[in-house]
Length: 456
Image (cartoon, rainbow, N blue to C red):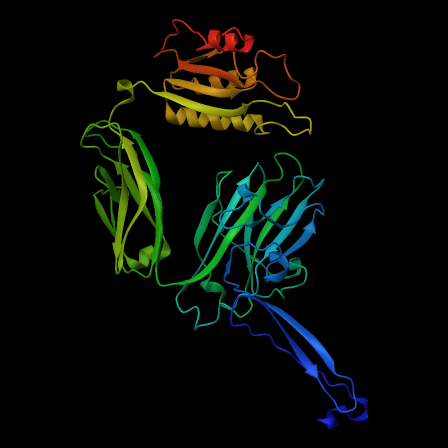
């Protein structure tokens, strides 16, 4: 009305965007007035789903409600990526790596505002899931939640609570974190954040973290348990040591857990049977279940999955494995690529080949070999003989003594040593109590030399 403009007043017009679908929207507000020029205001907006995100859009950190905030370490921040190894599914993900920062890094990846108090949408268990991938040595991510963050300023000024993100414990592969309950944070302004923090850049300090496929779901019931247990070798009619796994469940009433054949379960660690029943109350609070291997037949491998049942539930989870053939009755040979084992050699761009923490590489390979308990290990890509000697010493335990044979030929061994590329030697490591070297030779060496010399 004309009265709104009396005495030169400039009234404010408020515009609200309420999309009914995902994607980009545009429109116009046209203002006509008698005797005045027509004014056109262009409107744009993006419809988002704050409860699901695949990070496939290159502008995901500016057009989806997701944001990044750099607190320390200006060289790096959370950023979209399409590099295949850093993507779990679809075309993209987000990534953070503080390696090239000279000092400490701290970077926040922050979700859109989450209206978890919407009873029409969230009337059951509110569960968070996502996929993440760690690469290189360095600190882990933190998952945090806030109900007083304003969504735009420095997150350090808000109150945040750390919650268990169930992040992967191994590097180099994506793993799903799931069944993370958010029921305690039912507000109209809940935010989640994934915080990357290091004390310094460089090797062994700054891991690379990739993040993908975020979802918040309204779930009637869930089973949070996936025990993958190896009980080793046990004689027929014997019993293995006990292993423990947690089971957490809601929405299915009392839970019956059925062990695969030749395995047993217990709720107290003393009374074992093939089936146990976990009350709904115990399952909701997370119940420890004890398991053991009790083979009744002789077999190289005995394995199976657990079955869990409840109200409207019949599902298989986990995997149990064991052997009832004693180690003394077998002769085990393992092949193992050790990926530039022990090298400190760097390429012309000053990037080191293979894992950069040699001591950790030696320790991890020794753990694997001691677990496998094989008689012979045929290994590839051994680049440092002192590291190999340290490995042999670490597996010569529990009454076992190992020795080694190094092949005199390997890839490009006919060339002079290259200061920018390490050797990749072939080695046989053997238990001297169960194996004896009678003779060695390089297979097809004569033919290979003749082909190189063009004499055949």
